[in-house]
Length: 74
Image 1 (spheres, one colour):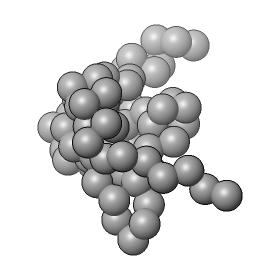
Image 2: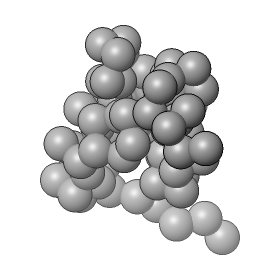
Image 3: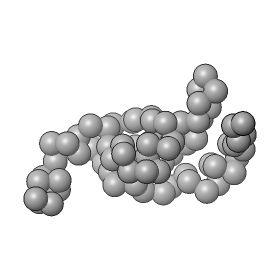
């Protein structure tokens, strides 16, 4: 049985939080799926399934893969 999420609660809890390169600007429900709308550090607007952002599986709009900050980790 799936848990229903209250968008207003999620917005209150997550808008403004930063996850790696992404700053959450809105929480939406699209086709029954909850997504975070984010501003990426590079300036692009990006949205992704909320669990991927919270688990840090999604770190950016795709720019992180080629960033110097990632290269400095190795």
